[in-house]
Amino acid sequence: ITSEKSAMEAPSPPPMILTQDELKRIAAFKAVEFVESGMVLGLGTGSTAKHAVDRIGELLRQGKLENIVGIPTSKKTQEQALSVGIPLSDLDAHPVIDLSIDGADEVDPFLNLVKGRGGSLLREKMIEGASKKFVVIVDESKMVKHIGGSKLALPVEIVPFCWKFTAEKLRKLLEGYGCEANLRLGEKGKPFVTDNGNYIVDMYLDKDMGDLKVVSDEILRLPGVVEHGMFLDMASTVIIAGELGVKIKN
Ligand code: 5RP
Image (cartoon, rainbow, N blue to C red; front, side, top):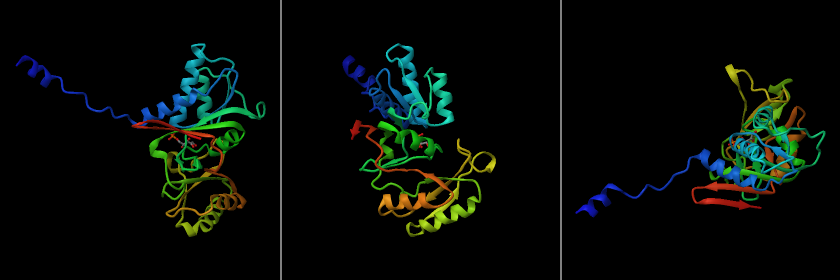
């Protein structure tokens, strides 16, 4: 009777369900295992990259990493990196970066990405494009069959000058994919302004784009466009954290 009772009082624990933020942290910590002392590091932006920046700061404080130079991809990451003790520099002083670590909004099976829903796509593309290795960290919800056709935003950074003109050119260009183009709004309904003083138009497509490279070139040819959030053929490695563990794709 006693043993039956205690068995009833101690039911087996429920399966552990990790939150999305815990998965992001797991992917970020895994990526930081690629970091070695003496490296110049591109520091990404967003809630996933934030975990990587925290971890690098922690390892520096513990003396497990030394002589790291960080190149931040946004003003926000710059502030965070300084607050955790990472020495910073820029692309002018370090035109070649050893390793960049950053999150993404979407990742396709060929490791093409959509980035920039956090608004930092231009600096991210400059810094990650100058990196010998670019490690992307995501939770499994970011994996898609085709980037850009998910009805979620494909961000395009444009100059503020006559933004309606540029937004309309973009809409027309992507019309064939069922496109809506919305100016991103920030605080108090005013246009969201990037770290570079520009605006962002979020493109919502309801069909997959055909040849991504062709669409990318067409967008970049429009006067008024500064950069878009498709990161084609840039990621060296993607670390995906899911309920069943971590997958690494190269
Ligand atoms: C910012 C980005 C971010 O990396 C992207 O939006 C993913 O963000 P999060 O890690 O918060 O999901 O591109 O411009």
